[in-house]
Image 1 (cartoon, rainbow, N blue to C red):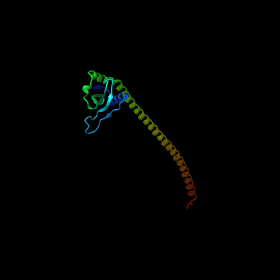
Image 2: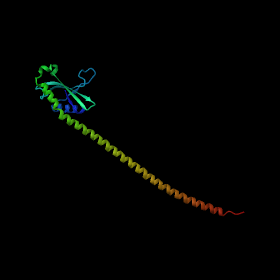
Image 3: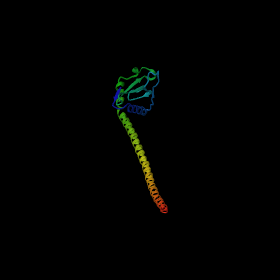
Image 4: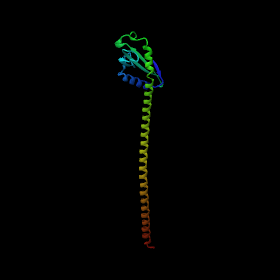
Length: 182
């Protein structure tokens, strides 16, 4: 087992990348009655950094504390259910620890990639928000332009109405002036 000061996602990405570099694709054990639940298993894998022969490897990644630290467990199983201890060289345990410790640069790289992806998503959201604000401003400016046009039309209508009232008043006065005084 080894602890990393990185989130579980970074450790998982680094482990997956390392094993893919070695030519292996693991499968995650899931299911209600599966005793290996939560382990990523690599069958008949040659990890020459640990042993010269093929072995079955099982890895489990667990967050230690609020996603900031992660524990990576590695279990080396014998091939096809054989006892791994009898197949192990005496220095294999140290080699296994060394293998896990050498994953740290890959974990750092994976963590950096996760941070970059997260920052790209934040940038995309910020750009989308800016576009929405610009579109909203454009819509408001169109409304303001329409309101200004409506105000001008209203002022013209008022002026026309005032002229009409003035004409009507003159007509009324002209009609009143034709009255006979009796």
